[in-house]
Image (cartoon, rainbow, N blue to C red; front, side):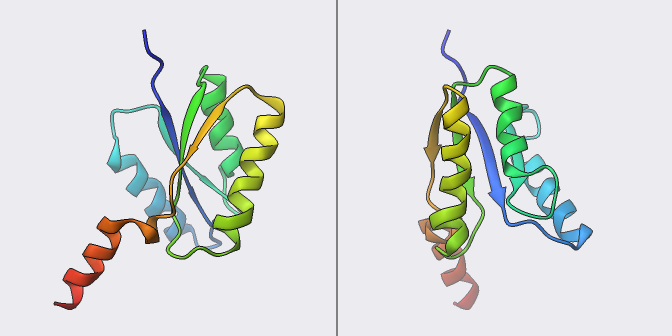
Length: 117
């Protein structure tokens, strides 16, 4: 049997509880019946990205898709997310599929175009 690909969305992290709740509900609504999809934050908010990814590894995941929830390719996308993945790979035999940041996806760009038409 083929192992499922687990997925972790990674967001910044917020001091404002409403922002965190919104993102947790958003991700929960994307795949409400899939226990292999979760969300982690880079800073401030729990669960941290490392904790979210380790949840998958504890379930036996060998392949984890990472989706950065960022609009622009700033430091979090280019440095922080890859660093988190590198640190985990040093201790665990896991493959990461690092998707492009959300702001670079065609569907996101198309949505923005529709909003101004």
